[in-house]
Length: 98
Image (cartoon, rainbow, N blue to C red; front, side, top):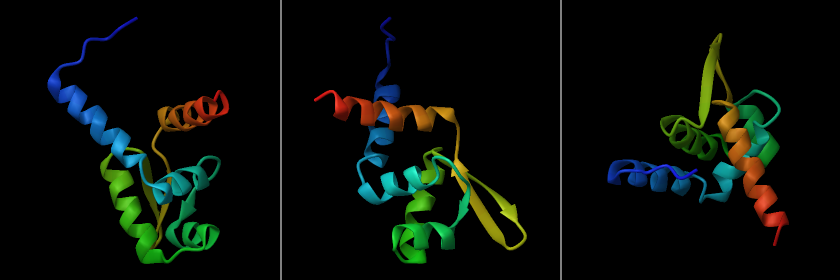
C-alpha cells in the first residue's frame, strides 16, 4: 500500500529522520526503551553531562519522540508512544538483514 505524500509531509518526514541521525539522541531513546528516567539518570547511564542530555531531550520533545511528566521538581521522560519503539526496532532489524 503506497501513501501519497504532499511536499509538506515529505519535508516533515525528512525532519523526523534527521532527529534519528544523531547517536546521542539514539542512545537516549534506547535508554528510555523500557523505563522512564530523569535527566540525571539518563546522564549517568550514558556517562554524559546533564546539559548535553537536556539539549538533546529538548529536540526529542519538540519532535514528538519523547514525552515527560513532572514528579515534584523533577521531570521524568519516556518514549512518546509505541511508534518510536517500532521505528527503533525496525532500524535494528534492517541492520541485521545486511
